[in-house]
Length: 157
Length: 157
DNA sequence: ATGAGTGCAAATGCTTTGCATCCTG
DNA sequence: CAGGATGCAAAGCATTTGCACTCAT
View: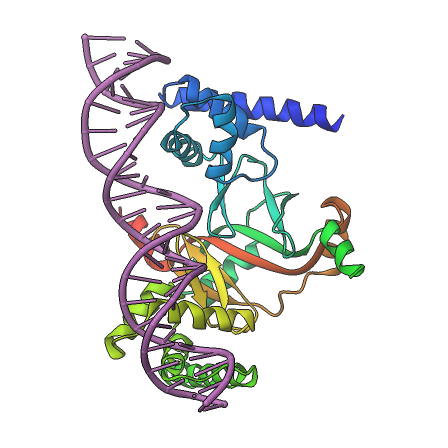
């Protein structure tokens, strides 16, 4: 069920990423296919390092620069977004509108589906008035708190 | 007027930071005083590098490590928060509840006052149910869009 | 065939750390 | 005067870049 659903969506993501890259005239090398396939299946917002290490296992000779290169190409086309929570950038293959919940205890990051990232009319007007004519295009939220596991372990201490 | 108000709030911030550090048993060295005073007056969410360079002008011999050390001490006491938008961390001396508007054009960051960062009851319940028992403590928002200046220059192009 | 893409390694940028010395409380 | 704080420099990560070689189109 859940595994199946994840597998299907990962496959769909992967396919979409590859076809979009091809449509943009980028070459589909064996490395790019491998990176995209692995990345599309990720649920944990990996850093470039993490992705690189996972890939090197099944694909020796994989280069760091190539991982960054491919992630950048995806990001430039809106097929990946970049999450900056700590020192290293985390890459997110989820292109449905969503926010993030970040655990203050263990640092885990969980996607929180949203209907839209578009600002409400009132927000647009308020920012235009109060933030030097700023025009909002989208609103990102970070929910900070404790994940179920950390909340439980705190209770028992 | 505006300059006066900024000066007063900067002085108040500075005073508050120093007294809190002292209350925590930290020594008030000349360097710490200088860093705190300069930082409290910042409106532009400086990086550690920027702050260091500004300080070195008026205070030769100032060390990088000391700047980080002091900013960390302030952050640990909730007197500064860390903003991670690009590669370098930006430090924010504003401890009133607020969100941030980030310009996609020039990268400028503007504070947007908020009444509270506390989540609404519905948000707490929703995340507990949908995000594996996650307990939200506060909600941060990033408004992405274009600042007045970038919006204007885009219109004329 | 041809130019984009790759691998490697070195460079760059930000942040942290170790240690001898200094100075606040 | 004791222990925290500083300055300096080196080490540690994350990320980017230069260049010769390879391969998808």
